[in-house]
Length: 457
Image (cartoon, rainbow, N blue to C red; front, top):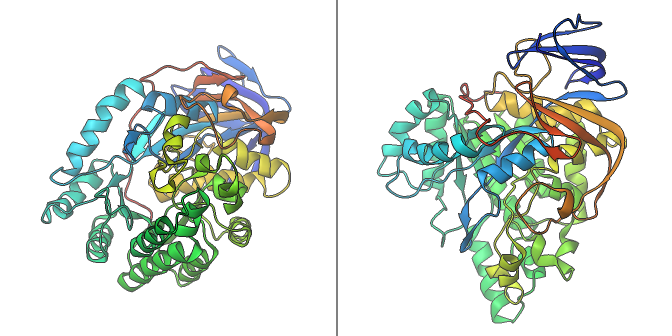
């Protein structure tokens, strides 16, 4: 073996055991007690937890949006991921009218091959069917390892929205070829109506971002999408769930054996809509916005009882001066917040404080996204899996600040949040990429993950 992590407590979604982990050529080759260490580098994890690396199934790196581009490049975003214990990131490259799926993916892969510090995969955003050509291409995309596609029910003016007919066509084709459709669910017409009304009344602060997209705006779209998924018996992955009513509808559909998967994000678990009343409320503007306390309580309940499948981030940060574009008009604020470096530490801190179990945190942040999205070699500490491993010190007290993060943004909504416990090392396929506060990996180390067909439940 090349490397042995000894004397730690190995935690997976299903087990917690004292064990050593043996690694050779980037793979886990042994998990057991008192592994022979001859010739291997030994890392002593006494008093520490040894965890599978997290998978952030929802990031937007170097994404053009709102008149600018998200602050983290593929290098910066994946560097930050490594430093937060995330060893695989899913990005959302966007198809535009006239572009094939392969053209979209190829344009991003060329950058990632040079910049990615951890492994990466893609959900391709579909905005136009190209007179049916996209539907014909989906099977080949799945064979090439792209087995999930995203639709937006919003962003008409940006040319990103699809109508119900297009959405259903994509769902049916995904069902046929073994893919998954991911959906951003909000009602665009209600949003437009609310925005027009608020601007006419001179109501322009960040608080009206929330009021233009309150619970019922998301809930209606959630329920509409669930309706189509149930009736067409097609798989559906609802991204960044934030509202109680839509959450309950999706959970009910899951009880009927529908292939519906629910993702939420740490920002919805930590913050409520009250942040939009703050002087810096524009920094928290994302879509869907943080909701009321009742919705947050429902999200935590669903996390504890298994109703929510995945916690991911929707990482899409912008610089302060860009957020300031909307200080007098909330419609001009670029939508998005930071999160990729905070995902695992935040959920593990919740476990460390007894809110959930460590097993549940790993299930939500690693094992479930690996299973749902066909990452066969990820998501657990087991023989044959990639040696994506995080060593976690449960005794560290850590306060998040922009000064100790590893992204390229100049502020974070997580400023001042205190965590109990923190990762001290991250290994990507057996290579140390983060060590006690410092990034020690390299650009270009990350590999494209060719995924299997999406999980059917």
